[in-house]
Length: 412
Picture: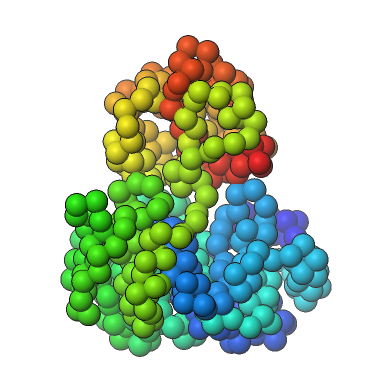
């Protein structure tokens, strides 16, 4: 499938429409769809919505990307990851239906997911946008039950535009006529672009700061909207930014008419790996038994700020970063919020990734951002270098979902 199209990313819906037609248009037979776009927090928000719906006994399909350790993570059928034989059969069917025509890897695998969802009974389908929104391969559902747009920030400028307004406009391309949209916290330019698109579509907006609010108060999460107030535990996913992601999820569950049980489960039962995930067992832990090891796949300036805020909340402990990034990212923007939060950064190249930033370049960017830095051949080498001098260190492996995936595979 990788050989069917020379580009990794090529935004258009023409190839997707052609293959879906050949497959019998499965996008028209999905259980009610909740379509989620945004720059940061899409996956966490989706995980919270799924936890809430499943607490009510609903069967939920979910499509997310990218995967971390195994491709199967992208397709969850009625609550369970797709089985190997089912995935192989679907991919074979889509490959045959495509008949050798040009199509990207993401497009053909998205079509496979939609085909699986259409054939498996469920109560809801959660679709996470891969990139952008307007021209993303997931944007083929004519009338979703609900749309969600999480915080939008500058990222993927080469595909989505140079300004926040342009990028938010592309994300808002998922909006459909008359379909409500929950909107997470946005900068003014981004919110204006989303509201403009919503007005053209006649799509009711349920916006943070206008129609719903979420805040931490006395160690609890307080959510308010026109229906009333919810007093809930803080999200089990770590980091202060997760309170706003939880707010969007709760607003979505409110819009779907869910119960109190769903609200509590959304904040207490969500699972989303490589987002400030504490690694508690595996070869890395065995090699550094005294260390506290964390993993995060965030890679843009907003993610850097979220990681810094999370580190601020943790008990004081000497903190070191092991970082690998792609050459398409704003590395300085990611690094600058982390200055002052780490004793040192050790840069690595991402194993097996053609677009990895060389470790030497990552290290220099860290120095430019005010973080002392050096390089290491591998994450294991970096961990040894850190714990040789500071056995009780806090170590955060960060910078890329691709690096996070490699760690989860190796440390599993």
